[in-house]
Image (cartoon, rainbow over all chains, first blue to last red):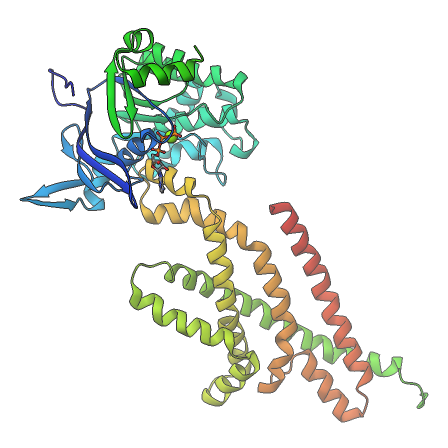
Amino acid sequence: MTNTSNGTPAIEFRDVVKRFGDNVVLDKLNFSVAQGDRVTLIGPSGSGKTTILRLLMTLEEANGGLILIDGDPYTHEYKGDKWVEIPEKRRRVVRNRVGMVFQQFNLFPNMTVLENIIEAPVHVLGLSKKDATDRAEQLLEQVGMPDKRDARCTQLSGGQQQRVAIARALAMDPEILLLDEVTSALDPEIVADVLGVLRDIARTTDITMLLVTHEMQFAREVSNRVLMFDHGQIVEEADPETMFTNPKHERTQEFLKAVLGG
Amino acid sequence: MNEDSIWSWETAWDVLPQLLRGLVVTIEATVVGMVIASILGLFIALAMRTPTRWVRGPLRLVVDFIRMTPLLVQLVFAWLLLVDIPPLVIGFSVLGVHYATYMSEVYRAGIEAVPKGQWEAAIALNLPRARTWRAVVLPQAIRNTLPGLGNYAVSMFKETPFLFAITVVEMYQAAQQYGALNFSYIEPLTLVGLLFLLVSYPTSLLVRKMETRLA
Ligand SMILES: Nc1ncnc2c1ncn2[C@@H]1O[C@H](COP(=O)(O)OP(=O)(O)OP(=O)(O)O)[C@@H](O)[C@H]1O
Ligand SMILES: [Mg+2]
């Protein structure tokens, strides 16, 4: 796989293996994402896109290989020849650099919008409540919901909840943001709002983004690289322009034809 | 006084103060018992989730044992064993421990009903495990357990007459004592039934309302 010539990649998979029972989802996967890259993962259902993001968030455990964040071993490492788990204490240090937005938002329903956003900055980063609140208000402004600070999340529409979830993830100042089909649980007319917010983040920050989406137009706008997956392997990678207009691999052509309805 | 009638208002009036004193004991036992049951039940539920089998195995055994033996037997057994402790203290302790085993199930279900996505969001935010429990999972789980807690409070309340077996003068025992002394049982026992109903019916309505509101 291509690697950045200038410096350590933000994300690197080395021979990562992931199985669910007998189902080998990732079989020695190798790829890396450079600092500040915006990478979109595409591929048919079940090809392992979500699994990759979940491994990066430590929501799944790999069965082999290494995952490196800024060159630091994250979940496992080799001690001599032995492949060993990295203890939670060390994982936490690295995990602070990674944030994730979920398809189903997963806001905490027992908290207000503000409480959702400041919970981790206060209890993980150790910010004062005042500083965290100031930052949260700024972020709510940024996602277009300045007046919803004290609302219960359950009173918000899906699109609003997702924007809060984005603000919540950003409040941790992640270096890497993982986005797994963040608009696919939303009504079509709201999708544009959320995509607009993400476009804005892509434009105004240098956060490394790894996203899975079926919104090809959006992928084209925000990402500078697209990886086509099939059966847990990268079959093709290119800049979005090339990938969407002139895919080389037959599997990619078929897949794009199916999703673009062309 | 009309000796032939089954019901005498005079007797009813006469016994009422005693019964009300008994009712206070009954309610006391229920409240203290429920406080013990809800706290201990939570700890049992949490301990059942530890990965160490040395904790879970024996605890499971004790919990099953308590749940599968009658409350009455447990009361008398504890009373015979712990001679130095006041019966009322034994009473609400045993009620509390007995119901804690049921409450632990309610908590377990409540904890399991918290969606997986909540845990995952907490991990994604790097919240420490303890903070996740305290700020995210337990508030939602306990909300889920409120109707169950209410239901068990009502059924504990109805089981307090067993305390008579260990000489606690709660409402039922008060009625018995009055009956034995005055040879009239109908009025006291009817009133006991009515007083139980008077407390438990509104409570269970409240619980049902809570259930529909939380559903
Ligand atoms: N928790 C799990 N238990 C068992 N199998 C799983 C689990 N999660 C994922 N899988 C399997 O792993 C494979 C890859 O799943 P994954 O969710 O990563 O695919 P995906 O590319 O995200 O698909 P989609 O486009 O449908 O979201 C699938 O075969 C799926 O059935
Ligand atoms: Mg997926």
